Amino acid sequence: MKLLRVGTAGAERPALLDAEGVLRDLSGLVPDIDGPLLADDAALGRIRAAAESGGLPELDATGLRIGPPLARIGKIVCIGLNYHDHARETGAEPPAEPVIFFKAADTVVGPHDTVLVPRRSTRTDWEVELAVVIGRTARYLESHEEALEHVAGYAVAHDVSEREFQMDRGGTWDKGKNCETFNPLGPWLVTADEVADPQDLSLKLWVNGELKQDGTTAEQIFPVAEVVRYVSQFMTLYPGDVINTGTPAGVAFGQPEPKPYLRAGDVVELEIEGLGRQRQELKDA
Image (cartoon, rainbow, N blue to C red; front, side):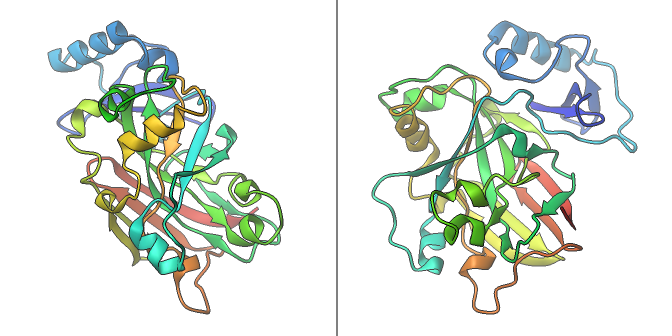
């Protein structure tokens, strides 16, 4: 299923995109798309049955904003330097274990919402990423099979980053990762049963119409199952938590000088095979 949330920011309603591409209203079945729903097999079954019966009311998509596909996100765990090609382009050694940092849930905006270039920013960068959404409480998972059983679904994430704040201002990466609007998410949450192999997805990103990233999740150093298993050794993952699993080659930081960092007026578009497409216009904060 393709689950999403539509409407003005803060007042989104749950919806479903059916197999024919028609937007359907879920608000008569469930209050929202969130962790408790993803952990409720009976509620998900009701949605699936209603979708298959054709009984869900149609929504007019004209002019309707698409919000983040997940409400009340608990935490966003991010995996850094997780693609072989990205490590090569930046001259970094592939890590021996996953590199973990965090983004606050309030960085999340809709897939087509405005992204704000922070004040005093000179090095705002793009990163298309596969987001993994947790559907069952996960702690100390033992196998890759068990890890994938705890995944509710997948979505497109844009891990916008400010490289000076991230690398040159001391401390952890978090200062360059948690600026306002720095995690567009969506358009949909695609349930795990529709993704046959999370290690066989193409990722692309364009800036002002120019293709910058053209990668595949097959290049991940630590695949999705290992990322989920590994993270569960250090923290409990709850339904509605999100893991951003890293970006392929092609970011501004990895390009020759002068590096083409983002500025107000730029347009970024990104997509992951089967998971939908995003488009953001950048403005000054």
